[in-house]
Amino acid sequence: MGVTDDGLLAGMAAGDAQAASAFVRRHQARVFGLALTIVGVPAVAEEVAQEAFVRAWRFAGAYDPRRGAVTTWLLAIARNAAIDAVRLGRDRPYDPDVLIDMISQVNDGQTDDYPEQLADAHRIRAALTQLPHDQRVAVVLAAIYGLTAREIAEREQIPIGTAKTRIRLGLARLRSQLEVRDE
Image (cartoon, rainbow, N blue to C red; front, side):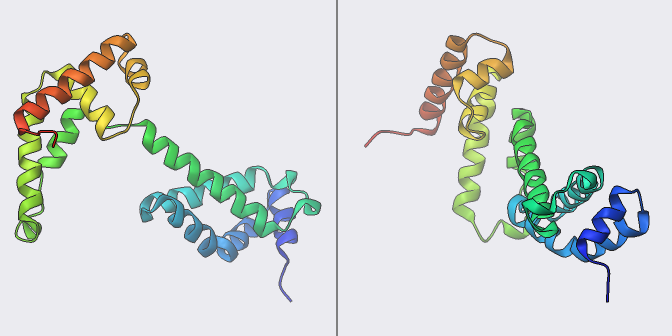
């Protein structure tokens, strides 16, 4: 009969590397699967799973079996680590100029599959490049990243009224350049 999860966790709490290794092997697929479900990117899910096991190692001594099974405890750690990774990803927006360059890069194999979307992407990119830098940043942060005027003001260290003006003027210029009309 093998060692129980409680036994492995007790070994981890005592600093036993073999117990930690066995614990990881036993739960790695489940932890990775949960992380992948939440973050959606395999490379990030691997990092999240690793972070979850590091946290489990660090807090193994604090585990209380009366509060739930080891698996439940570990998956809660993995879930929290995955949510932290998602939040961290949202907190690091690309520089709008870098994002515009990324939008303009098109995979050669996809150009024939989506000609209308490609044409729209080129028009939008061209229109964005015509905006003043400050307006381009505000529009990209608002429209693509979903930041509010207050969040943009904090990020750019400008008054909220200035952020609102940059967004409004930038969107108005884009509408004009793209000939968008309310119908």
